[in-house]
Structures are given as structure tokens and as C-alpha cells.
Length: 172
Image (tube, rainbow, N blue to C red; front, side, top):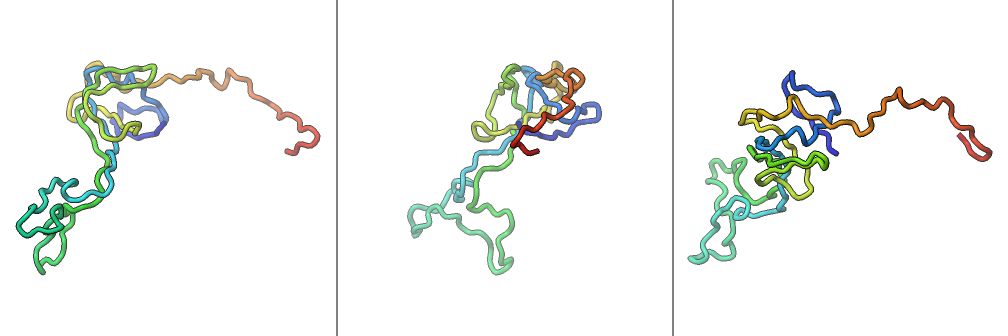
């Protein structure tokens, strides 16, 4: 399991450590889903930024997929920050907004979403109520929490009062 912190208003506060169940989301509700995109490794300018590349003929040799010019002349004499160049592609946090909840399976803790979500199979996703749309009318307020699997309290179980005696050859 993963512990995450979500920003909420005063009237939506929950106890520390409370677990939200799949019942928190209802069919037809819109949500924002955040995840880490799939890493693609080192990519050139054509793959990473959809650059056209250089011509196939007319004097271009061995540099058809190159970036092209990266700056001006002696003045300013540098490459500006955030210049689109070759480098690491993917493996970034991205949020897919306004995805529709199709249904939920409370027993297995599954949420069925219509649309694509960022990340690899088996990756962690943060599912939040959509920020650009009003809350769904049937959504539980402030949240639908998981019930504790063990409902025993400390008063129900007798506490052990003495430690067992050590036998010969045992230390402690």
C-alpha cells in the first residue's frame, strides 16, 4: 500500500491513516488521475519533439536526423534554457483530467475508468475528484472509508501479565 496526502477543505478533513474505499467514487463521476509516464530513455530531437529533421539530399550527409541550429551568433553566445534538444524522454508526472468512472468493485477495491491513464501496467495512480467540474451529486461526503478488517478493541482481548519463564539453557 502507499500513503498519500491530499489537500482538502476544513469540512472534508479525515482522521490520520483513514483508508478511502472504492465506494468513494460513483459511476458517471469525473476524476483526475495522476501517474508517472512510461520512461523512453534517451531520445533524439525527432522522436522527442517531433522535429522534421534535415533533407535527404542537397548536400546533407550523415546528419539527416540532427537537431539543426541551437542558437544565434556570438551575441548572445549561449544556448537559451529550455531549448528543445535531445535528452531523456518520459518518466514524468502527468495528470489526465476529466476521466469518467464507469463502475467500481468494492470487494476487490477496483475502479473502472473510461480513457487512458499515465504510466506502466502495475504502476501507482492517484485518483482525485475532478478540479474543473462540480462534484457528482451521488458522491459520498466527505468520503467513503474502508471498515477495519479486525473489529476487536484493546478492551476485548486480555493482556498478558507475565513473561514465560526461561528454561535451562535459554538466556533472556
